[in-house]
Length: 396
Image (cartoon, rainbow, N blue to C red; front, side, top):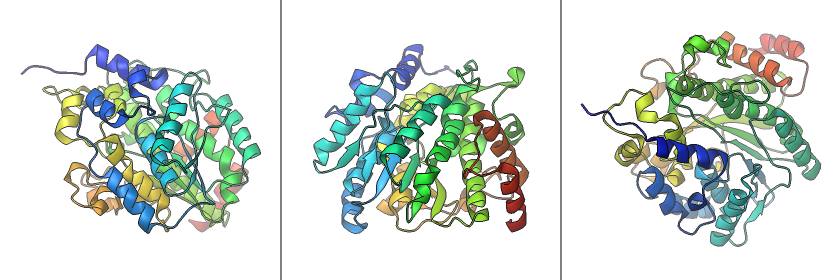
């Protein structure tokens, strides 16, 4: 059997897009949809454009609503931001140092299709891999806005089975800091604005990788065990952590009688983006006869269609705590199947989904929460941790 993996050149391109941007993949280009497909494989957009037109017609107008989408300067996050702008939200697109052209491109790409859209790029950049950057960005947003109605925690970075452990300037494992700890801290920074909304929602982007997370590693969420470190395992663990964060946060909101803020999760399905190339995905999951672009061609869908679960989870008038918004992917035959809420028990075939209470006991999610608190030095929702823990014990 021939062994096929993602080439060094393709993985380098995916890393470059993540860290420095690539001109051909700037969302301001008129051919961005096609460039995504031709670079990472997979099909053309199937549902996104028709779905957005449908959302504009049937969902309530949101002219007074403000949404912030992390990772919105490309990929899934860009399509989320564009859809929210199309249905009337003022959309905040955080930039990153060195990727200002991508942020401007995202704004230009949205305004080209929706000239009346309200899109804002804050002057202060956001780098989720730097706690000082998250705090500076949070302070700038609190200074500029009186409320945030929707917080879409979409940004993420990947890792492959053979990749070395990377450590940020904050001393944290890079995948976990960007995907989980940074979003934990950002939510804390923006909690006063979320609480000021009449109906705020936090949507965290998990993925099917959470099914493969190793529960024993939750107690070492930062991946400090060098002998057993695996960057793809760490990614899976970070997507599990996004669920544990959501469930822990909802418990704390309940404990403090905060009912105007709801946290839920979305799952984009197998989406044809560079993040999967960052994973060296087919190699990392043991598929030796196909590379990731070919896997995208066979079973993936376009980033625009992968954005639909987060979009639906954001704009639907009603969402319950811990709701899971997902997709039937390439098997979807209707708008509803392309982005919908579903009971996670229905797809928990192997008993590994952290959304299912029986699989991850409370002690495991609390283990994540304690480690996130220790890493960032913050608590949510901005209260004393021990007091909060006592309150949760009383109500859960």
